[in-house]
Length: 117
Length: 117
DNA sequence: AGAGTAGATCTATGAACGTCGATCTGGAGC
DNA sequence: GCTCCAGATCGACGTTCATAGATCTACTCT
Image (cartoon, rainbow over all chains, first blue to last red; front, side):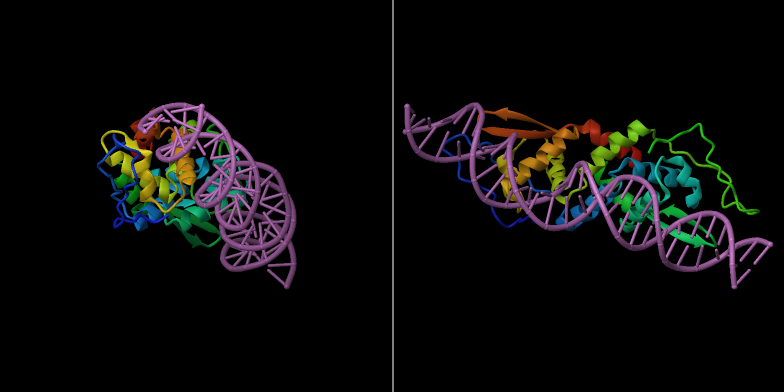
């Protein structure tokens, strides 16, 4: 699963006409790929993608109690999704008394957006 | 799991001090979210992300035999990953005799990149 | 025709996922 | 103290995932 830039990726060709002689290597290294893939996987669910959408479009922090009624899922499932987004470094949360407020950490998404652009 | 824009997302507040009064709705609708999440999920794996990276950086079509030696995974696993990328509409393939050539379809990624930007 | 090759498909396996209801935690208000 | 509430965590479930080896399918070359 590791990209080995040292090894020549030439396989034995059957005779003439090789399929293609110039070898293309990935530009993003393994660490970048793992990091960005983790972010992509985190937004690879419709609910979480819409969650990020709401949080990004909202300037400040959004209370969880505002998020729950937006989706047809249980509160525990929403909490689970928010936890995944936090684990991926996409969002962070802050407790204020009884309520929890979530907000976006732009760095993680920016790296992925930069690569995709 | 559906976003209902009709329903007022107000829950009964315990007394004074509501956690936050302005309600934020997602901008991307359910269909967009499902589509973009599918693309994000497809690149939500380090191998597939690097595969897309290689294919995007290469102008034309890349032979599978060039891709196999880049990763420490079996040929069948690589084929499985390429199939996932094709199912997500990120790449397409073309047979030429014994070899298969893969290339990027930019539209799917562009939509996600546009939203992330 | 027969041998060899590139790539896709099949089968299996163990891990991770999305979902829910139930429970736990800790702050608010009486 | 006690009760109520918001949100997180737990336990369980069926599903999907990444992976590998084995097999299958076309195609090329002799």
